[in-house]
Image (cartoon, rainbow, N blue to C red):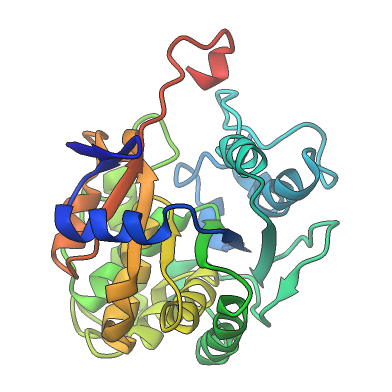
Length: 318
């Protein structure tokens, strides 16, 4: 993979270089859309918490960590069942090193963070196996578009991230409903990616919703409502609103592909001002394929931070 500014370019090289050149030396705003879904409590789906029942606390704890450098709603920081700390530690460190301002956007939480945040009017997500995952999807999308437009007036470009346990499973659900082949390609917070469990969970949701693979290719709002999570309409709306005015970096893993698929139906014109930013770990993950999913949707650039903590003295970072 080619590099530019120590960033790995994983796809669409010319577009990636143009995007990076445009934001070089510019001042960003980091927005983190956070939410929760009952899908994360399905045993074996998510490791974004020491056990499935504590996943409601992971997004607000991540948000507190980004703003305060410590968590208030839990002791310590969110960890996986094997003791690996939240990736928000890396995000917090990067934001502080670069002196980037942070705004937290509540997309639908059970537990509110003990910090200031922007409330987009979402509610916590339900178990996707019911076929009725997300309420007021359209309303949250429209509010988020308004917010994205306003935020674009305050900064040179936006970096939008997320925190929602269970997000790769709901991403698979939405991708499947829209007709993107992502089975066996989404990443995981688990050491062993539970692809079979994710696929079975999605299939139960599809059946409960009375839809089939690709049947909602022209209706991503319904796809989110049936099989998604509350982070999705908030994130998609922020991107649509902001990218009409400034560059937007969608920061995350394979969850970003579901957001990309939604935007590609609703407002594909803004994608000329969008790139996906992830890490070397996601690009090189043999159990997932972010580039393969993106290639089915749009030719947006995929960029990766070349992080490596193998020499760290802290076992949780290695």
